[in-house]
Amino acid sequence: MQPTYILLVVNDPLESAAFYESILGTAPVEAQKTFALFRMNPTTMLGLWSKHTIEPRVSVAPGSTELCFVLDSIEAVNECHDRWKAQGLPILQAPVEADFGYTFTATDPDGHRLRAFRPSHQG
Image (cartoon, rainbow, N blue to C red):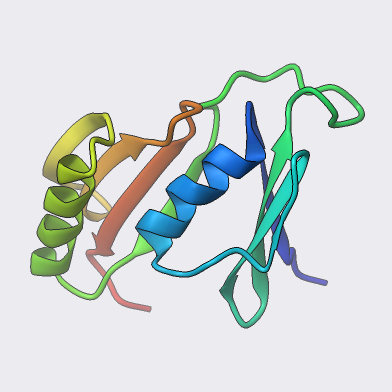
């Protein structure tokens, strides 16, 4: 059994869907006032659920987890950083070499952390 859905709790799913459409380059497969859904890849979905309607209520603040994007090269990481910065995403960490690879961290409008990186070791 493998996880197939990632759910982020957001203030406004339609607003968050517009944000994720701009960074993912794809439209949501579902977008409603209380929930929006994106296909991330053939087996993984990203759900955006209203913090006002999710049950049970969430007690952890945004930024407690990260949505990570593996990229193919250092150049791709730098290009993603420049694109997200130009789109106005808050950058928490500029591109840097870490023990696991070349990376940077930004946030979405709700404060969820977004990490793009090129792993040091390709598995």
